[in-house]
Length: 533
Image (tube, rainbow, N blue to C red; front, side, top):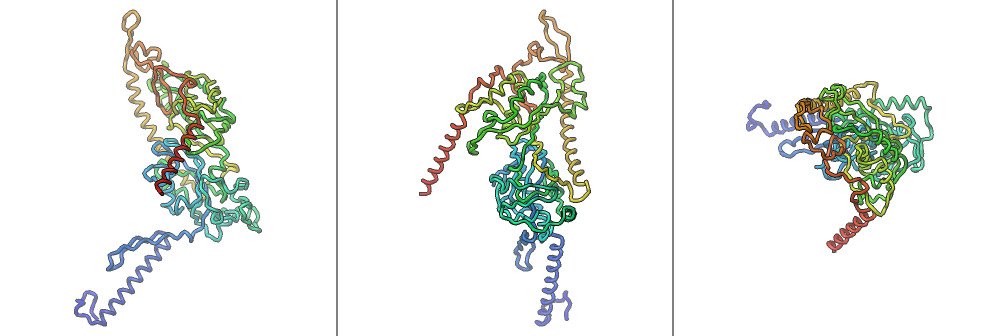
């Protein structure tokens, strides 16, 4: 028979048929080998073309039915300065959110098929620019534990037995105990019968630990796909009925601010004012009203509030001030403070409204009693109009559950995943610190410039560095002496005449805004009905 390189025109019909059969057999063997390799490695087959057809063959769909599902919680840290809030904005993919990035990473890792099919819930819905280091989300994910054994770590209940519910709904069970190390009591009120025979606690713990060691490295997988300003810090096994929002007992927020670069704040007055927030109050004058949410109850409970000094990385480097002088000038690097606020739940912009009023008290523009005045709500009147504190220094610091969640950084005893997260955060910290020091270098240069003022007798006083000039000297030096208002986040605004909060114009009342919203809503419904006729 002719060789493969022979001229096919010289081949007999039988030889050509034999050759075609051999080539088809070889092609079938190659395709079989490729499929086996892809199945063993867990990677999808690349798109390929059928010989002679020129058409692209579609990738084989991922078969979710082959894998077990389990419910986990994720502890997420993020710097929200470059994001339009934490919560995803539905189909508006052009709006960048932290949750949107998280969903993208989850789908890339094939931990979830879709955001709407994983019973997702979040603890806090932080706004544009707000950061978090203790945000908690809960969801059902694909598990590496065999389907016939996943019930051993789920207390006899698996996510498939629980109806899908979104974040706005109440949790299926509010009374079931949550987490007892790796095992929890099943929610019998769901109509699910728990397994009758349970091994001893020690045997169950050993079995569970062995199974958990086989689980997917959720932290490593997600951090590989997420932007560097979003990190998954840990994951925790949770009950199938767990809801990150409704099962949270309290949230802890932090707000950082300086003692003011233009005159010190009265921290004692701020603390005195902050005490009035403790307890349960109607906070409608300390929030932004959104009629679309149809909130009926504006009472919230503040469990703890305090203001404490914190050390600054810059103060350790520059010994407290950039000018190096001993005077108390306006450009001296201030002491930094943190407002710690703990409560069961918060209204929209509540923390920023509370902080704004406290900063006004600290500057002496308001008295501590203004908090009491604003808590004495007249439901027929709207809140006085005052600015929000900056969103940049606000952090969702912690979300508390009882019993506490068993956070895991790795499936093994290795600390490498935790160390990798530490290294990445340290890199970001170094970048921001170097930027701050660079600006500080320019500020120190300006502080050293000599300035002189004319005394009352018309003589020119000896020059002094700008960094040594006090605020009382500003008029003599021709510096604008308008009132400076600290709005947090390093932002200062000027005003010629400060109007006390209780004397300011007010927004419409909650009832007025709700009625106007409902009227517009009815009008839209009527218009839609007319168009459909």
